[in-house]
Each structure stands twice: as structure tokens, then as C-alpha cells.
Length: 166
Image 1 (cartoon, rainbow, N blue to C red):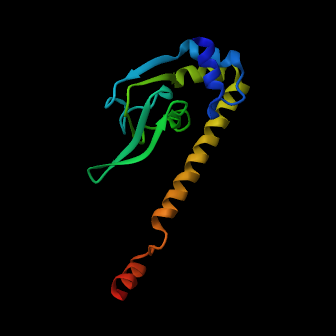
Image 2 (cartoon, rainbow, N blue to C red):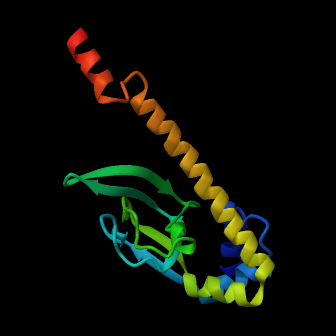
Image 3 (cartoon, rainbow, N blue to C red):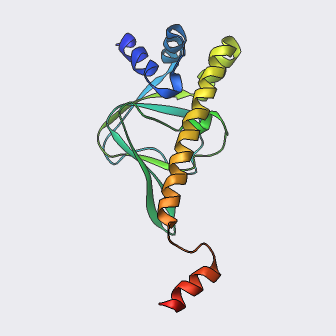
């Protein structure tokens, strides 16, 4: 089972290029979280102390705005979430809820700090991979924003012209 988990992590973008012995050491300190459909891994505003690697199941990432839930993403087996905890040390920026029964590997920021203390090069590789993943997600968000606003005026003046012209 441990070997399977190590291989699964090696296929993930945030662990690309990380040595197998390093991943095995991270897994030794990792917890396994199981959530039933409808249960939360964490909620927006919670303290951020870990990232999750989804092994089984599907989750949705959402934020509350004006009293409504706005789904930002749906993630499945092989995806990770909560990785911002490794970089910004701020509270959770969104909630993650299981859509189906889920199993995830939970890697604490403390275990990654131990990696920093013992294997600086491997720690730097994980951090660089996390930054790449966040950059990829930011580009996707930018594209979605562009698609959502395409053809819409970006200023009050533009909205007024559109409204009064029709």
C-alpha cells in the first residue's frame, strides 16, 4: 500500500521530480482522512495547517458570497487542495466539501517544515511545484473571468451606454 501511495504522489504535479525516499518520509507522517458525501474537509476561514491529496472520490471547492455558495472547482482522485497553506500561512480561502465518499492523504505544514530542515533541495522542489500549480490555476481562473465578462462593459459608463442604447 505504501509503495502504491508513493507512486501515486510521484504522478502528481506538486510532487513531480521529488525523490521516492522523500515521498515515503512524508507519507510516514501523513494522516489519512475519510469524509462521507456532504462532509467538509475544511471551511472558508478555518486555520490552514495542511494540504490534501485526494485518493478516492470527488470534492467541490466553493466560496460564500452574498449568502450563496459559488463553486470554484470540482476535483477528483489525483488532485490536491489546500496547497495555499504551504505558502501564505493565512486562513482557508474557500471551503472543500465531499461530493462522494472520499479518502485523502493529509500532509501537515509541520511535516513539510521538517522536510525544509532535513532536505532543503527537495523542499524547494515541492514549493516550486506548488507555485507552478497555483500559477496554472490562476491562469484558468483568469480565462474563466475573461469568458464571463466577454462582451460586457467594464465600467459604469459602459453599462450606462449599453442600457440606454437598448
